[in-house]
Length: 275
Image (cartoon, rainbow, N blue to C red; front, side):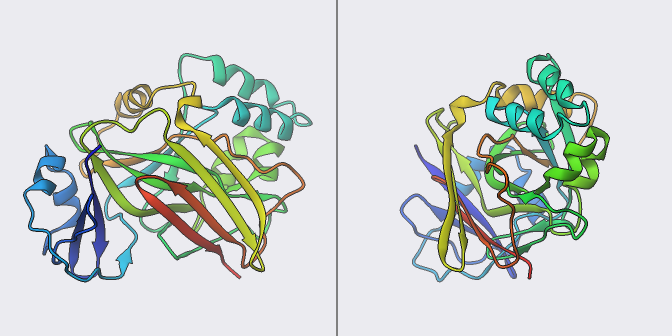
């Protein structure tokens, strides 16, 4: 499969091809460039050389970040377990089988953290986890135009206490990890695409898990259609598609933990928990 990786850098945009060659920085506006129709073909028309890669920035400007929940069976089971005492477990059971998916607002540029950045855990939460998710880029024409890696940081005790607390459990400063680039492909990612996550504490691995995107109950196109059904996105949107890699309790993130989320051919998103 042919692909291009689009990086946001201080001087504009750099594009890397499948051979690892990269363009000189393009003096392009991020919003305008990524929302062009036929983005894959436009990337292919660039000049690729042995140019040095600049330090990357978070690949977002005016895009909103949304997320879909309970799209994997493992996520359904975990959410039911954490909300059983509050009586909210039936909500997750029903939404997994419902026609309409769960979709919620996750944040924007202000809440987003890129590669090698610091994500945060809430001070009023005692149970915090990263959630590794394949993320869709949906352009202003409402087309799935690319892919990123997402880290849906979540305060599970807050969400488990009451489903109505989900916005507080999901949306706060530095809660939306995204990056390291925007991948545009010749055809959709294969169902066998693997999402993996490793968490390191004091350089020791304390969690490892992986899955294939084929384990999703809902299709990417289905999630795209529901998100854009009654909303326009003049600069496009990012949609995290859910996870089934859920650390079992009593695991909770701690300051300085290092999170590695890998989805090939996008790459690896590395983020550290803010001290």
